[in-house]
Length: 258
Ligand SMILES: C[S@@+](CC[C@H](N)C(=O)[O-])C[C@H]1O[C@@H](n2cnc3c(N)ncnc32)[C@H](O)[C@@H]1O
Image 1 (tube, rainbow, N blue to C red):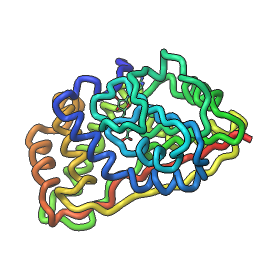
Image 2: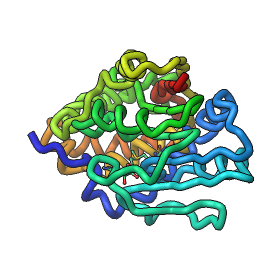
Image 3: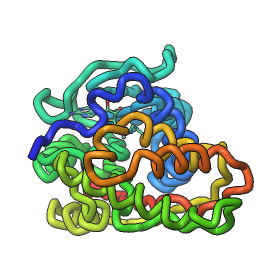
Image 4: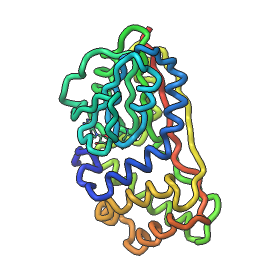
């Protein structure tokens, strides 16, 4: 089993995938950051920022504080004078200090070292500080609500099966989102978890994300059993505005150090 980050070589589609992830989940993360009651002078760290606006939201919530945003490949993050953007590998590099708020979205599930990294993040919390970990619920299948193509359920099913197999082969734990709550309790944090999903039409973020993903890892999906013709039909369907789907379920787990 190879345990490298599954999208490591997805250069051409990586920017699109990260933008659609941000479009899907930034509003939900913003609500959770409001739940975290971030102080104006908070010191905040965003791990694996991607193209998300989470760091900018934190800079707005903590105008008298400091925001550091990191990623192993930070090229997709917009420049912002309020944010200290750094190249950083959360598995191997030390964290840059201690923090009142640490955010990590859609990262730990990919990392075989997720428990060790979660502990490392929790250890970097100041008293009263919050660790916010947000992940997809990996066993949740997208529901097709309406489609111009009667084959839509089968195409989605073929994609989910092949994608799950590719993720597992890369060391991803599809049940991780449901284990974060217990893992944070084990670390002595006060924990609260909320779920979120949205309804998406073809051509909008929730459909363009699987389209970009299917393009990025096409060979891996085919090797995992998805027929090339199905993959092309699936990517085409995801552009049709008559398609309506109930998208991925995300679980947002907030742990506060006492
Ligand atoms: C699925 S994306 C999520 C991006 C962003 N958190 C979001 O939710 O929109 C995963 C991100 O993790 C970054 N990444 C992967 N392995 C990493 C590591 N070991 N340390 C830091 N970042 C990493 C990738 O470059 C990518 O930006």
